[in-house]
Image (tube, rainbow, N blue to C red):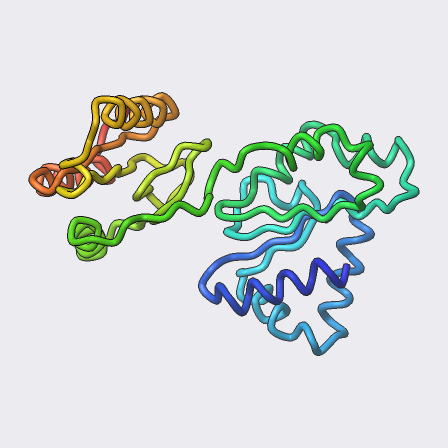
Length: 241
């Protein structure tokens, strides 16, 4: 419990504008956490976040229909947990809710010994991250112009991330994202080989298949790009591919 609360406290300090959550399989554990928040002055900041609806704590049922930016999934069971406890922790419907409530980061707390017997959790820990991986975006005049225009138009974005393993320079900050941007500056274009171009288009096609409208942007196509994005994010938009 202490480890979960310490992680939440660290996130609260690093991400004051982001929502946080703690999900666990057992109501008794949730009640203990809430009691600790009430009694321990060290976690006054987290208690205030909860009062302001910026911190959700509960079982998977509490998180149905809700998402947070940063989520701790505390499996709770220790090294001597029974097979019955394992089956409850990984009950498919509840497990699916628990691991899909995080928009930016999911952290799983599990006993190293018990991990060997958790089938779904083990697969999750070995899986490729969906969003967000650390991808370095080359900061140049083209990237800076895109940033400036996105912010001027009030379009929320993530910069330098991965979606289902595919790197994206810019991705809409919503779930699921509707648009993404792959940059090709003059410097990069000057050294672009046929294989590089094929890889770029393959990446674009993979993202499109996942429902993300992706533009490969050269310096001369910026105006056209933002006309598309405004239409795509407009409430009157009829849909997107």
